[in-house]
Length: 266
Image (spheres, rainbow, N blue to C red):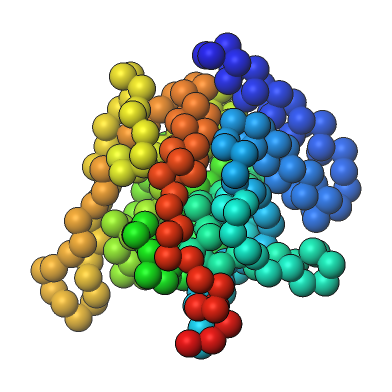
């Protein structure tokens, strides 16, 4: 199975390189989301479905996330299609996990920086509650990048700084996983950074990391939210951990209290 996932990673990286020939960013983005969806979908239970769209909360306010690249949701539960399925909105209780796809994960300070944009999408998605659901909120959020020159430690510091600047609790808003398929000289085959709370047994050679604390607010002096426990994986193990986490999320998902009217009226 190790060779199997190694081939998948290599295929995804090759498809990413080939897609650079497309000249429009929307086209390349859609292609690359399709590459990831196809690779993941073949390893997950048949009762799950994948959509691009938004997650919606329950009535009467129906809060919505921003546009999400990939939403893994129950194929047995309803969703809302608009404009002949061009736009799909997934009820929060039917949502299992989300995957944000980035071509190049960057941590700079200019307008092209992509990690902050992914984290902003994460905040909107994790703010959508599930209604009377045995599975706890927030909905798991993973980031997958085809490439990044940033080191794992740099990415972790960037996430910590993002949460600290916004006084966001790491236990809620730290990404459930960040997977890079190809990197620079030190990590040519990429790496993964995953929360210890992911529903998976981590590889024995994973590195344990504790992130920085985050202050409660600028007016509560001396108090902070505790950091989170992470595991860093290398090479193809990261893809294996992501697939295993999503598969286990799907298997553990039990929408026993789903009622469509919760999203239509009180």
